[in-house]
Image (tube, rainbow, N blue to C red):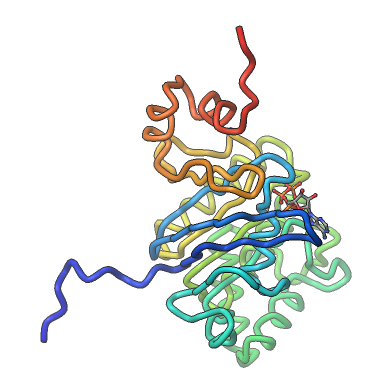
Length: 253
Ligand SMILES: Nc1ncnc2c1ncn2[C@@H]1O[C@H](COP(=O)(O)OP(=O)(O)OP(=O)(O)O)[C@@H](O)[C@H]1O
């Protein structure tokens, strides 16, 4: 039987009714979030909104007790290995080994994902090549700039060809030019490699005019839509003003 064009594709990430508390303090409340294959989504929230907690649950650093998470249709609990194989992660705090070379860092990650050295090397060259960083393969990470290190982390996150890339405030500590370049680079990756991306940030200038934005505030999703729709729904002029209104930061004239 032919599959209808209208058959919904399995989302790259499917989060349903997710709640989480630290002790008695709720950090996430009834969060729903679906990301389609190849979609770029900005998770926008102030410090403390719950972005990192959400990442910790999706990457299974914390255990989900209330709610459901699936990656590419793989339930995070019952099919954890498959779910993990489908995701790449760039954490808020850099996790490269500074004393190893770029090559050593990437090949080690490849080994963790069961790749031969040759395959990991070829993929490392492929990913670094996309960023114009092939020449950095033999350099120690310590010798790289902050922006270059972030690119290596993204290359590492993509080495096992995940369908979903999670980035938690990946531009922290970078100057404006490096931030802009990184945001642009990940948008391009999304378009050219069909990778779904969840980009967490509190910086409004990282949002592109046609991005889909999920506004998280005090653990709740306050808005989920494309920039123009959120701006219109809030009766605001800009996404910055709409965001301020949604999180109650609006200043009265
Ligand atoms: N390990 C922890 N123990 C107790 N409370 C925590 C812990 N981690 C986070 N929280 C609290 O949970 C809430 C959400 O924090 P979280 O780090 O997820 O937010 P965030 O949006 O990622 O913020 P930031 O951008 O500052 O990292 C905050 O109120 C925070 O104080």
